[in-house]
Length: 518
Image (cartoon, rainbow, N blue to C red; front, side, top):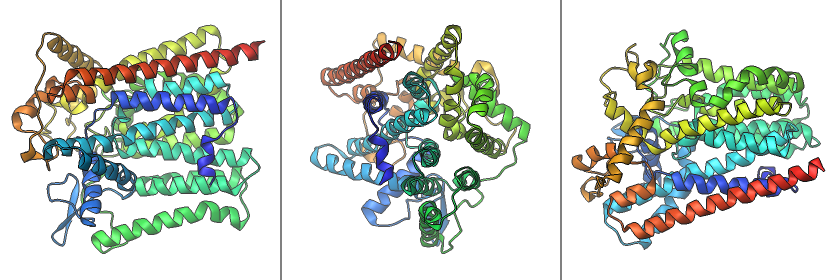
């Protein structure tokens, strides 16, 4: 299947892709929080748990974002995310069954293994992003730069610690666009259309709003790719029909209705358009350009990209504006509580790739500007990676929520007041917690078997100490009382592997550049 061909490019691209894949995979494993804490994550995890353990689609009554139907509870969310995490859940069950530990620790370890899906998705996104850059005829250096910049210098990076749907959608949408473009550039093989259809179908199963992208994707396929024969239509259409059938069956099994998604009063679009647009693009708490500084270059990069790749530029613009205007009107436009404009994660890779045309013609000074923006972005993301967003919201008093999502003053401070922006707030919290750690004030957080089935399996005392934590798996291991030496050795080993891979990648890239110059 052509879906797998993305991992088998010709040299030197193959070597670059392998190196990038493992750099990002190991980096994401190192910074992983080994936890599922958001309502979205808990909901899809509970469904996976119910399917594996009970063979049922219903979930416990205390599951976040669930609707009642005939005395049973079902989560609002589509089935796609759960299908993706079930293999990780099964792997976790095997590991937990081998190890001897109490139920509280077993519950946390199981969630930690499931959370690794984010690292795997990030590593595959790297492959797609790099290959997409090469399809646009960007040099190896530019394609590599854009790929690493996307991962480490934008608000996507903290989400690779999670299993949220928006991160998954970023992978499948970018992959769908990649295969559509590849269809045109490589002898119009229907296998590429099939791969695009499979990824788009998965997008529908992950989040129903992916349907809004289909008109633009199909329009691009018909007009630009000039798809006419029935085999080509079947290649891209059959996976979409299959996804629709799975979604209909899933809805029928839950609510006895093929089109009932379960969002019973759980969604609306009352936000004033200007408020949502300003919030998503420029607000200090959620602004797209603050959380992805490299994207400031879009102001200069879009014109040359339009001139060179007009059809693709129109497609990406349509996808970006669809995402932006849909969520600007959404009652929870900020995707709270989350890091940056969570709902724009899905379009972020395609936005970043358009910068490549400008970079390909950039002067030394312009490249230095790009490097500076990437460095600023990396510094910003460190705060998002090291401090869990929910802890910051608790510290500022924004959570637990005291106002409804439709209240104009809902999370007003962290959305619109610079002093409370998570960009600076997370860094201040990080420095405070680091200082306390260096003074020996390290929290002790031991899982409590009594709370094993709860969203956060800790007692009240341990939960209060979460505000003093650093959001890394190895720190949680120390907080739980595990021996420091093996934990430290694991961190040193992973860090060493990452540095070795990066410098190996850098040397190889330099060798390629020298050969090209010569």
